[in-house]
Image 1 (cartoon, helix red, strand yellow):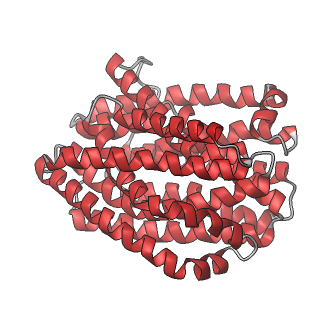
Image 2 (tube, one colour; image 1 turned 120 degrees about the vertical axis):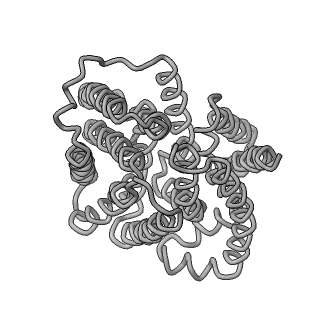
Image 3 (tube, one colour; image 1 turned 180 degrees about the vertical axis):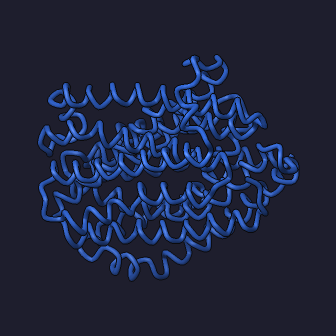
Length: 410
């Protein structure tokens, strides 16, 4: 379970490089192999899945990272994990059935340009991602970074790449079913392997209790809302463009570039926060490391912004030859906000675990409010309104991150 910070960071950073490459590769393949309409629908399906799965998992993955890691009682850890998995299985079964039964009512809100069968499959995809979040946190809670990164890689990009390679000629409903099937199988296998590795498979139904303490429920629900609203900041712009899938795909691609740098920050922050919350390490020392990381990230991210304005046009053209012009028109406006995004995600896990109040949730709600106010005050096209609203949303990240860096410094 324990290990040197250098080894843990090396594993996380190594996988981050692989995951980042595959994220870029998946967009490249989609741009090459799919029509603009199909690409937009597929990317919306994946983004909507990430959004609703964060809410559907009810904060159980965050509960593990806080209460499982901070406990040194193996029996209590086993009981907590078993209760969470059983509860989540019940909730997700209901979700799958609801999507099948009410697909016709759901479809206009999620995928108006796609057949109703896509919404029927959507519940299966959301369930697979939600179980994947729990699997990822299960491995992280035991400081098993290789296994945690594997399931994150599968869901983040690898399974999508596989589906593109074998199913690019399929219709959207069949393609979504293929992706959903792969996703839930990968999650179930990872959870089964964790239970077997930790000796939990026999204890899974050995506990009579199905309830959690009130404080744990409150923590999990608030963090589920935080994860949901966080993903909503990436979905809200494309959602306003859902009737124009090609334009929605351009915004999704641009947001992905902005958050590629964030993916380099998260693996470092993840290790330091887990160490700061564990009884195995010096908490004060780990908090100092978190502050140093945040300052370094802020400085380096500005070098990334400068690099984009020097070489971005060439790199984006190589990455997305069919839609590079439109994507760059978005990135030219939003790239100065990348340092704010990096700082926010560098501090987010620490704030979530270190404070009982849901400060991240409040900040994200304010950012969404800034988006909506700016969007409805703008009298231009929907595309230009979404672009201006995105600038307002990311400005909140600067204010919030600066405040907590000051608190850490004090």
